[in-house]
Amino acid sequence: MTPRSNIEVMGSRESILLNALTDTGFGGDLCLPVPVAVSLGFELVGQEAVEYADGRRDRQLVFVGLVRFLGEERPVNIVLTNGGDTLIGTGLFEDKTVTVDFATGGIHIV
Image 1 (cartoon, rainbow, N blue to C red):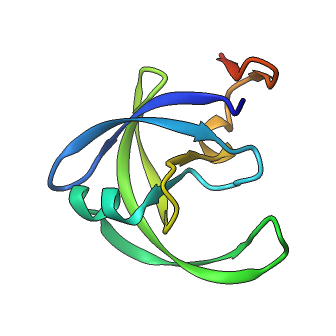
Image 2 (cartoon, rainbow, N blue to C red):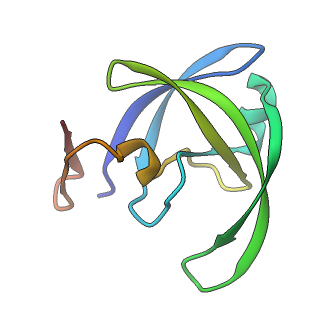
C-alpha cells in the first residue's frame, strides 16, 4: 500500500480537501490532476525541468497555490498531471521527520 495524507488545497476560486499519495520520488511540493487544478484556479509562475521515474525528461508548467498541511498553511509550487492521483512530494517534508510503513500504508510525520 502507498501511504496517503489529507491535504487542503486552496486556489483563487475554491478549496478542496484531498487524500494524496506520498511520493518519495517526487522532489516538488504538490502534483495535481489537471481537472482538479482547473477547478481551483491557480496562477502560472513558470516552468521547470522534470525527470520521470523511467528516465524521460520534460518541462512542466508550474503554478502557485496554498495548502493547509499538518496544521500549517503555506504557499506551494504545483505541477499538473494527466493521471488521477494527487501527489505530495518531498518538498512539503523539508523540515519534518517522516516514517513510512509500506506494509500497511501508514505514515507518521513530525
